[in-house]
Length: 318
Ligand SMILES: [Zn+2]
Image 1 (cartoon, protein in one colour):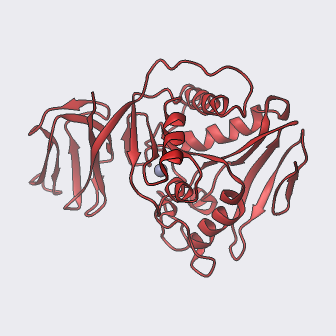
Image 2 (cartoon, rainbow, N blue to C red):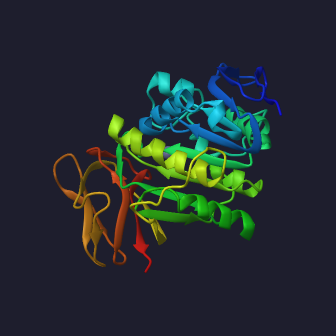
């Protein structure tokens, strides 16, 4: 079967690359379509919904170059970079034209602002053809994280179970079930009946070949599990452990942030995990752990912004 998104068409056995214009915007999405000789499922891979999360973007670029149609049954649709203008303006996670975070506004709106239109186009042009979805993220430019994977919770039990099985093929220590149905790209895809995961690997506006190679191995293993990519599924070194009761704590003050722990480090209930001070060194906020747990991600820049992210941590289930 032909794989077609707007102007881009891949016949069976073909790989095509090119840009696809998002209607009503100046955005041109860099896309690769890989159509296998044999029939199978169609998987959507996106990166750069958050434009400063470079390890995901470089992973998408390299996967698009490496995977060939003769290794595929079914199809792959890879969007190398979604927030192109954000990347080119080097923003942190927002579309420069409207200041919106794409991963908060799905399913978007064709009559809205630039970001709304991008989300709406992803839903109508790509989600509509996807059987499965893998979204590649990292910590933002000012965030460090420990590698982990989100899978769907707010979906039918069958879709949620398939998403969890995908997450278990990712070689990271932790996984988190999300109970959100809209806003995020993979969350909304879940409510459309598409088993979806979001992988977090890397951060702090950096990337390395070593990290990208681990990231590619993760995606390929999920694709093998879905029988879209040839080869046997590899057993993970890490079997991701479920993290529950995740606390996403925002900063109460703008100022300087002093984390007491590293991302991925464990802590005890009542421990101080970080403090905010003003520009004179006076303590303004103390962040105290609500339970024994592990830090998933946290701000790693000295600058911290009121009502913006500070730390996210969760409970390790046994
Ligand atoms: Zn992200």
